Image (cartoon, rainbow, N blue to C red; front, side, top):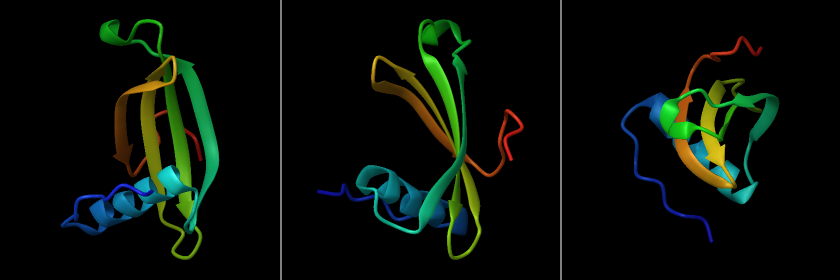
Length: 89
């Protein structure tokens, strides 16, 4: 079952909502094209992994970067942005 995503008021917000549905269900027009992982540096995230993934929409070519901090399979932090922090292309 796919969780409902709150309605966004901006185009970027709607794209993020669409991407979140894809990530949860594996269905939709998004493809992951790059990923970068390293040890998280924040004091509160000690022992966790920082993961940056770039997704591209197959119909519009829109790119969204998902940044997550994960520790033992639990997502501690998740954010979406338009540009990559680690220089992924």
